Image (cartoon, rainbow over all chains, first blue to last red; front, side):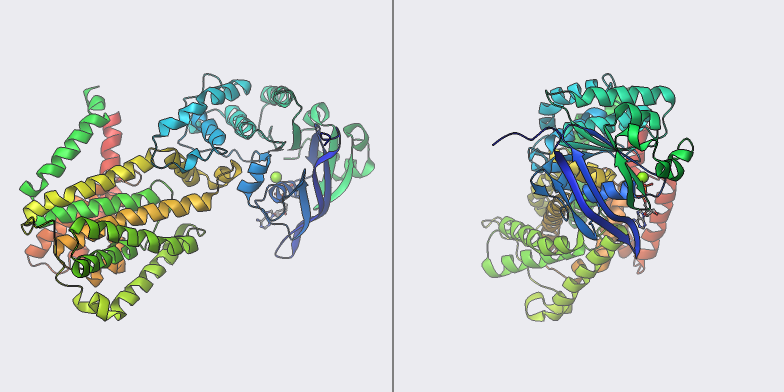
Length: 261
Length: 309
Ligand SMILES: Nc1ncnc2c1ncn2[C@@H]1O[C@H](COP(=O)(O)OP(=O)(O)O)[C@@H](O)[C@H]1O
Ligand SMILES: [Mg+2]
């Protein structure tokens, strides 16, 4: 058996459709994400990007279509199953456990694969076996020194960094980031770009990333390929250098990219 | 400083244990046992409400049917009362599997309504199945055998039953402070995120539902032995409501707060009843409203916040 061919699709969607009471938020989307690449999803507000993420990760069941992650069919599986198969995600709106510290967050993410979470008869100190690795991950995203602050009290940029650490803790095959720089100032955006570049290259392989991103400078510095969505459909797909000059994209999206959120 | 040290667990644990041991000296012993049983019941309800974010409005099904099951075992087998009580708890756990399976997928008020509906079905069955449950007369004459030891005095029976309550409370505490408890809190705070981390939240909720039912059943079974009968009251919806009320009074998500809520409500109900007052509900209801308005986190939750300052 040969290993995965570099550049072959690790994540592939075919004919994905999702209707909400007759309204097609995602309308026949094909998507091929190449192994080891960064693939950006862009498009105006309401284009269906988050819905597409939810379809890929099992949070929504597709009305039609399929999703494959390597050899696994994902459509119809539960979010927890998809996560265990190696598709990890962050959320557009920061999504954490208010009462837990960052260290506890990451411990919980690391414990997910072990079945320790079922041990209701054991002390929660048993989770400390993950604290070494958890501290490493927190350091990787620049949260060392914040491991014991309740997550609710963290600054916004740090919460987003914790989101990233949680997704990385799952040791995913593919990482889905929904607007990782949304609501950030320029400095935090730059730091997040560098962070994503850095964390992709750890563990001797290059992590595949799919990201929803509005900020075109982020897309240009990170993305190998870009898929532009509009009204639930793929408008164009290609390398950033190509699509940025496509007249359809310019009118549909890039024209008001600076205003878009 | 001193206060915050007092808030440290060993001290409170000792105070709690001493209070539990001295209780029948200060309150009428049968009432003391009622308080202990309801304290465990409230802790079991708090496992769901405070630590998993599930408001069950049907836990009477587990408390009350364990009372019947315990009573039936004691009446028909002649086994020592601990066996009957544990049998009752096991019965509740088994009953919780289908009820939990069918309700934990629902959220918020829908979960509360469906658990209430199941409890009403249990009530209906208990009411109809007179040959077994005694219908409106209840299941009478439940013995409290313990290898020939005379436990007829409620004062002594309190001490015979207390180990079961303490063991049940310990289990509840262990659950809350376990890796499993950590997962429960994550489900409570953000269930979508817990799923994205790979946790099958429905299975976790089902397990805690069954554990909670078993602990409720332990309390309900002991209650039945203590009273010598099991009645329809035990499976009636007001029983579910009273347990929730105790948790809210004591403080949701505090585990021990439920014991304070139980002591307040049981003792108050008893005083009002001995004073010949019929409509105790209106008094407890009014007190409930006042406490909830004044102490937003319940008695224990508020006290803890003050101690931790
Ligand atoms: N749960 C839902 N129910 C009904 N409509 C929805 C739901 N989720 C998304 N939509 C609709 O689908 C469209 C796409 O939304 P979304 O995927 O969030 O867009 P984007 O992330 O690209 O901004 C929007 O018109 C939105 O109103
Ligand atoms: Mg979106």
